Length: 309
Length: 272
Image (cartoon, rainbow over all chains, first blue to last red; front, side, top):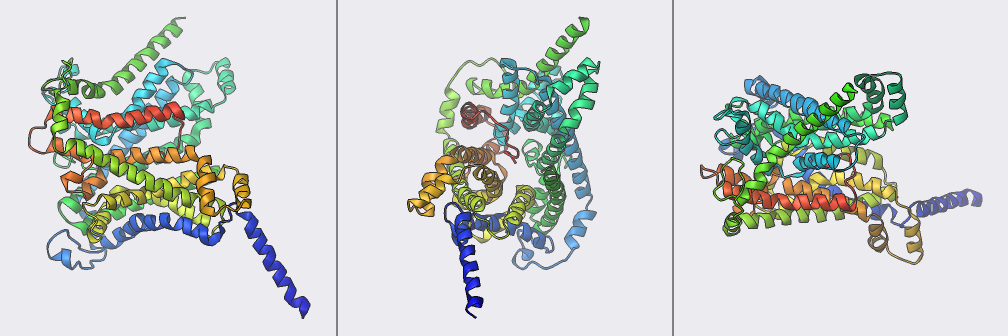
């Protein structure tokens, strides 16, 4: 019997010592939990809870004002259906696709890679100047950047019309989508440029050298040596940039979705439906769709990260 | 040889076009504040300082810069403290479900954006009486930035040696003392990165303060800029350009400081 009682005690002590030494500061689980708790509490209150609430709200007819504001009713999938049959939702979705493809995939990734490729072997002031300007466009506050573009594209005295000798041409009214696409390319290229700059630094120069000696042209070097090496970076870059551009609210600052909703991307659409028209329920249903799209992109991205490790 | 020359010409033409593309929109911001009665046109300035005087006299301009400072510093302090504590505990102690928690945090931070959550955040703020409260906005912004901050800092903490903590413990230091006097000095660069990242994020954030602060006296510079050019019919350009310049200078200085001190290294996901 004595033998039967002592081993568990030994085992328990062994567990205790192991726990003691496995944690350098002697925190222990309880105190570790206390260290994590305040952060988790804020995340739960202001990130997780709103996300869950958006799912619930999307199922009600909640409004900002009026009778439905006091006692919202459960309408099930009604909002989602309303949102989906609304032609404005589809035109807005289509504009968002244009915006993401044009400014993120073609604009930022293309331009970012081009700059990184052009400057790959350079040191010195020219490289610093180009990179500094591109990064400046990225770090300035979005309200200011948007206003600078309003000034640039202005109908009467804007710099662009002065340069192109097209006085009186209203870019923001006649080409609102083109304007916000070029604007967002200008604003966001820095991230892709830096990412590709780092990635190109990892391509072994000897591989490029032997390709060049074998007589490969610039394009062939890119295709056969560089792209296979940075494929992971390209995918990471595409996913992150698409996610950010998809959720970007700054087109609102430039065109406010207008004229006539011709540049109303989904981020602006939600704002208009939910907070300007006061239809919180319908807005939440559109938000739910945005969340789902984000989820798909993010899961895809995280899987990719994992498989790389 | 011709090929080489053509290549050079092509290269410099391309660089010149790029430089023009990235410089031209910025020109107005450097000329208009020093021009009397500026229009949208970029002209050679007459180097007047009247516009700055007008900004100083405007009832909401300078206070809004102060508001931006309060919001961004408040959020940065809260994010750094809470994220450091959480990242430290997660890095050193195998809490049950730790990996799942980290994965969930990373996922949440990338899918729940201001765009997707604006409706419930607005309502939550109404219910909790946090509309027009700067503290409320700071808490909301902190909640949004924490997951990414914890994730970045945990990586940082994982790579610091544990031996210092162990010896501090031998001398009888309490866990909080160890964090304060041993761990914090070790990870100071990481904390600085997170602080700068948080300040930059909040300094430029437009959507959240625009939604949650309706009292002009509490609004930060991002919202005031927008108000200046949408309200009252004709935008006051001398005011806007000068105010914009003042609003931009701090982030540029911060960038220069960071790139000088640490080198502007690449951090994936530094900006959302």
